Image (cartoon, rainbow, N blue to C red; front, side):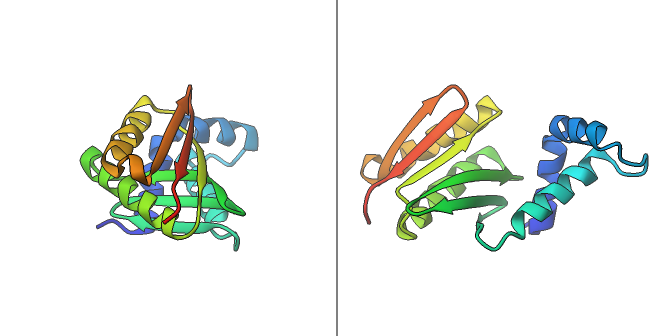
Length: 143
């Protein structure tokens, strides 16, 4: 199992295009790589006290809560089949924690496919899934 930092590093490499843009705008010294910058951004993000961090397997789920809803950021370094199972477990945990709606954005069609597969496994009684373009809305039933 990877450490949380290792998962962030994998995600930093996966999001190197965004890091490259931030790197160029920051005018950083040459020894700072785009991946190091993205890792630093992720680390700062996760140290905020109101952020809820959950982990299942090699997938980190970061929630920015507001009452019974939240904005989700997913960082993954797992296999596709494990990621589907991780999302199912995350859904059950989020439901037990009292979240009713979780919003997210997916830059990759693969992530959208994995979320769809997870909700097929999660079952209709667990909640519903709405996807429009890159936006994802997960709605959970009462426990």
